[in-house]
Image (cartoon, rainbow, N blue to C red; front, side, top):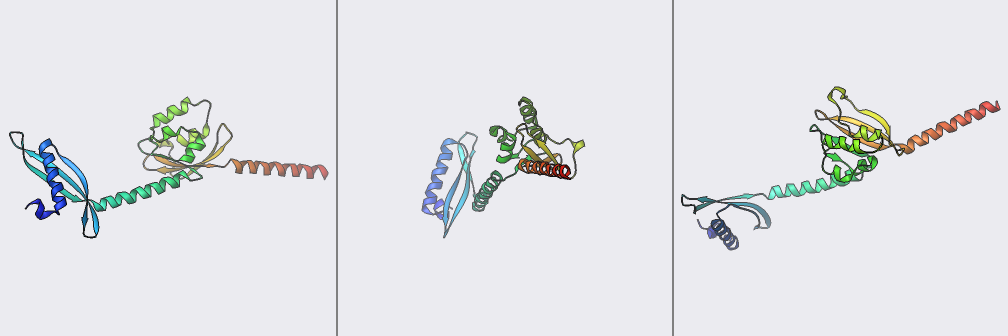
Length: 219
């Protein structure tokens, strides 16, 4: 059957041009085409492969045509969901750090970068454990919060349940760090700034002590 018997005139002309290009260049050609099918628009994945003879010339052209409209729709939906997830993570009040089984940090959100004072460029690269360790060793002074948040759990010390600790950064920021096991050797950690809460509790305790001292002094 001819192209004109299978395709519309416009598609037949396009197919002939593609075949001519493959024959002239003697190499495969892959492209996506948008075509009208009734009232709908379809996306086709078209592959032309030249089959060479013993003389090195093109004897035949193998053509594969796949309807990938559904795949394109899935990709578009996935992109939307990915953007929504990224927006959600970037606007969380809590910091979020994920450490995986490959000893990488595949996810660390904007708030975690801010709370720990980390270089955003490094975190966007999904750094490995050795890069993170080097970063911590090069930073001046001691930062217990960053060390707790970025250290990969050792298998022997891995706790099966949630672990909650508080660590104070050099600038006085108090972070509550929750660690939940993830995968075979990783962890998910959330970072919450509890500085204001701890200061309020300290002020309340001091006020209560002053009140008791006043009562004792006047009794």
